[in-house]
Image (tube, rainbow, N blue to C red; front, top):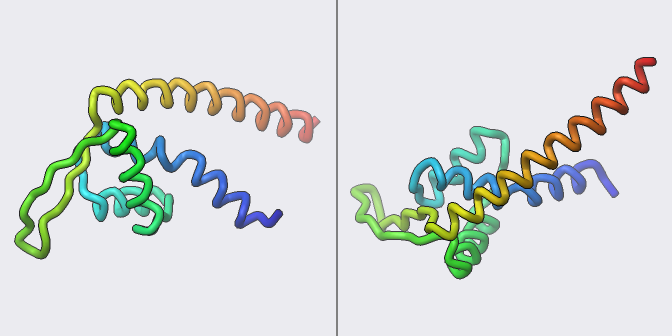
Length: 115
């Protein structure tokens, strides 16, 4: 397995949580979501984002509204539903547990290497 493939798989694994986290803070349309992800070094293309947004909407975790745009076609703004907020809260707990576990393991490995 190549390093690039492993890095891509790690990013894919947390992409849903990152998107839900963005939408928990603010409603956003897909281009905004992509821009926020890019600013955080999470590179995502529209071909990845749109199917994920559709799946999350179909699972009733997201809702959307249309808004006219002065610079092009109407924009679809996404926001979390009540069910989406509850789902995000569960993911946040899981993320915190994983982060502690990974940091503990990698710190212990680094400590052993330095001894």
